[in-house]
Image (cartoon, rainbow, N blue to C red):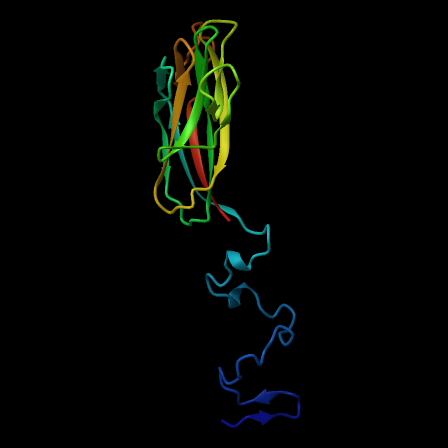
Length: 207
């Protein structure tokens, strides 16, 4: 078919792909002429988003500990059943880690909690200056007023593992003195309050 310039100002007879590359630029396109229906999946990636645009939760892994772990060890000890594993979908993803729960100990006792990723300490800062350990994610509290008083704790941090391999985040506890409990069972001797299960949650954040 021959190309015809019509008197109405239109051109007919142009086959698909018949225009040379670069013939149509952004100024040639009518306003609102391109919408999501014209875009193929994956056409817009993170590199084409404006700074600060994007970012979403890609997956969530959560493990809840309903039983009780007890320790009187004055060194870092793994808390059984308080571990979660996640496999990021991209090396650019961040992992938001949150630990919340319930702990308790003897009178005037104190304990610390930290998190390791595949055996490496992550998301920990400086602890108080009253002895070892020097670094932890959060304090598990003390009970200066009564025996076996319960204590709610929470700690969180944003990790940048730069990996698409399976990542295991495990919690550890260091007891300063006496015995400390963590998990879902009551630790109060009076039995008047029920305990809250302890949970570790991992969220992959796409950037």
